Structure formats: structure tokens, C-alpha cells
Image 1 (cartoon, rainbow, N blue to C red):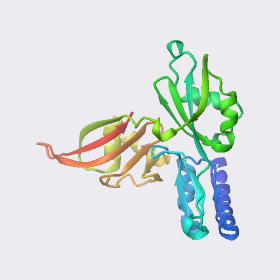
Image 2 (image 1 turned 60 degrees about the vertical axis):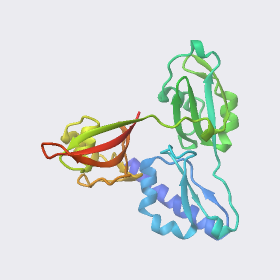
Image 3 (image 1 turned 90 degrees about the vertical axis):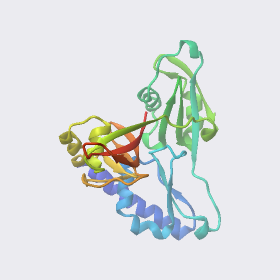
Image 4 (image 1 turned 90 degrees about the horizontal axis):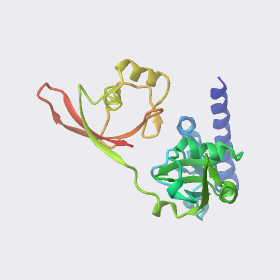
Length: 254
């Protein structure tokens, strides 16, 4: 219930930001929004489209994104998103621990930073790239000096230039059909019943939008997020097996 109330409050805030942008001729921005929060936006998108709206997370790989109200066509000028990418790396890489996404996020939260001011975190080797609101970047670069027991330095990164592309594992599986529940079960080796529970719990997203339709037939190019398991891109059908099943290709984010 608390989450539902928060999402209703978010919808009201989105309506206010859209109105403010339109009435005052300025760009307005949300904090970083997770997938469930973005879904709240999609539910009222028709009510705010008049103001001009788009989303950005700092990189095409980002799932957590800001919403910006206003457009160059309507306002006559452009204003970039207040997003910076920070690079966090150990002072002594040779002796650094193996750090995870949870470790880097925990270090940031321990500094008293609001989760909504931080976007996606990508761990690559012993360093991490952190997308954050521009306003908190100076604080993080000054005070983020340790992750677990590893001493680190934090600096503004060029982001897209330094961030390596995601590791995608190309796999091919056989399914009875390209129904999303069947594909999810195969990709993550889950019983069909567990796959169904994920739909009921609202943990399945197609192209950034929540779906409760477990019989949806995937189309080439669809991106699927299964919260708690990961993401994959559906590449399409590759033919039939001797037993009459459909062979499909997917790209799994690792």
C-alpha cells in the first residue's frame, strides 16, 4: 500500500512538473526513476504529452532514467539533462577487493545520498561508472573515498567514451512458441509456474513498460527486463527443430 501511495504521489508530481514547464516556458526534470516509477509515468503519459516529454539515463544502457518536460521546438532553446558520469576506481588496483554493484551503491548510500539522485551503476573490472545528478557530483568526488575496505578515488568521467559496451551472451533456445512466459522460463531456467508468479508480482517489463500479459508474443527487437534476474533482447525466430519447436535467438546481458 505504501508503494501504491508513493506512485500516486509521483503521478501528481509529474502533472505539476509538466504544468510548470508549459506555463513558465522552462525545462523541468524528475530525479532518476526506476522501472516501476517509469510505469507510473506511462499510465498518465497522455495527460502530460502537451508539455513535451522524453527520458534519459546518461547512456542507452541505463534503466534508471530522468524525465524531462519541455522541448526545443516548444521553448526555443535546448537544455541538457543534469546528469554526470563518475568513475570510481581503487587507489591500488593490485590490492583491491572484488567489488559488486551492491558494494558501490552501499558506499554511496552510506554518505547520506538519496537513491533518487543516483542512476545506474556499471561495474567493469575493479572500477565502476556511476551516473548521478549533476548537483551531487562534487560531493561524491570529494567524499567517496572508500568502498568496503578498498580505498578509491572518484572523478568525473567522459562516460560514453570510457564506459565499455555491455557483455551480451548470444544464446539459442527451443520453445513451443515465442510467448514471453515460455521464453523467460527457458532463458533463466525457471519452472513455468515461477515465471507466472513474476508476472503476477509485476516484475516483467517489455521495452521499459510493465506487462502482466504472459501470453504476449515477443517481436524481434523487444527488450525484456525480469527484475531480480536480468535483461535480454529478443532477436527473433531462427527456424524449427525436428520436433516442431521454434528455435529463437536472444542476447542476454551478463
